[in-house]
Image (cartoon, rainbow, N blue to C red; front, side, top):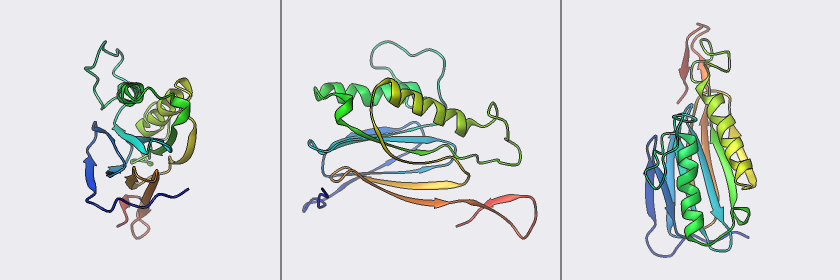
Length: 177
């Protein structure tokens, strides 16, 4: 069931790498991705949801308490889970969507240990499985940039993907805008 946008003003929040936001039905969350990953979570009945934008899978040690660093996938997921917990909602009641994890240097990064985008995606999938949040949609991997707009009032995520292309037959890859 689709929900109409709010009749009053929309709060638009832009996420930079490492940022996180959880909002109500009057919120749109926007971000740009390359090798970074964004996870959106949305509760269809409550019409609340959040998005994280993380750069690396983990820093190795998750701190106790609230001092989480959204630049790391495991800690960004803790931020999302804290907000879900405050709602007294079960993670299974949310829908997740997963985006990003592009290889921004495909000629240089062909092995998984060098491809941070691939490692970020592995972490995101592992975390969503661990917290039992069903993944409803995904647009992941490949190369290039993605622009996302998450409309919390409907759960819709709008995506524009700009793959890398070869420039005039040369081996160098550039973003196509």
